[in-house]
Image (cartoon, rainbow, N blue to C red; front, side):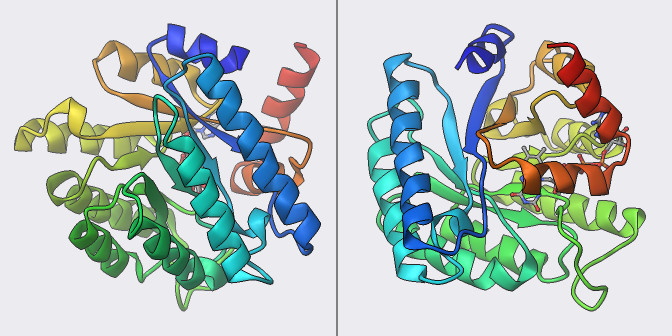
Length: 263
Ligand SMILES: Cc1cc2nc3c(=O)[nH]c(=O)nc-3n(C[C@H](O)[C@H](O)[C@H](O)COP(=O)(O)OP(=O)(O)OC[C@H]3O[C@@H](n4cnc5c(N)ncnc54)[C@H](O)[C@@H]3O)c2cc1C
């Protein structure tokens, strides 16, 4: 909560994520749901305009889709009492995209305050972008953080960037308040040029970045008048998240060690 307060004071918003994924028992799935109850209360008590992000496999998607959908439904219901009622569903490995989007659409039919993440590296994503535009759903667009085979995903950075930009342009022009989630200055620069040329107002989208990554770039975007939301993960089940950050960027080992030593 103190990290969120500091971000708000710096002109940024936050999305909070209780770390955890791939749970295999009902008890663990319910523990995750309960953690979100506590989190939403804490946000509301402080009147923060922060929202939450969650992973459906932390709520049982791997063994009971209905359990995950019911937990999401409950969390969306509780979030409705908060200053920012939005709930973001993180996207996980490619085997889970269909189930994740299915659960999303079920709950979205009952409340508009929920939205998925789409990963630009997946070759299917332009179709998913069109579906979300048709639904008027709020999408977070990111590159994608899982090791996927070349049959279904772009693996080289120029192709991923090109796919990201194509999807970002569609969402910015025709979508509903997209979150452009990247620390990639080339992509951020291209998005800045695109919105300038097309006259897209800064209130119609937000940039998103991870807590602690490229803080100078974060400050620059806020100073330039853009909306910026920071993803703040917390909790003891940090291994999966940490491992993905390390594999996409080995320098993050040093970054993490420096942060620990600075405490
Ligand atoms: C808000 C948010 C939510 C996300 N949610 C999901 C999700 O639901 N599902 C999913 O699969 N992925 C998610 N991701 C991760 C995403 O898919 C990418 O794996 C991750 O953002 C890295 O890609 P990038 O676009 O930032 O570019 P990169 O190419 O990784 O980084 C761009 C540049 O940023 C700089 N940089 C990156 N990290 C550091 C660092 N630690 N220190 C200093 N410089 C650095 C480097 O100069 C690098 O060249 C999310 C990312 C963000 C920002």
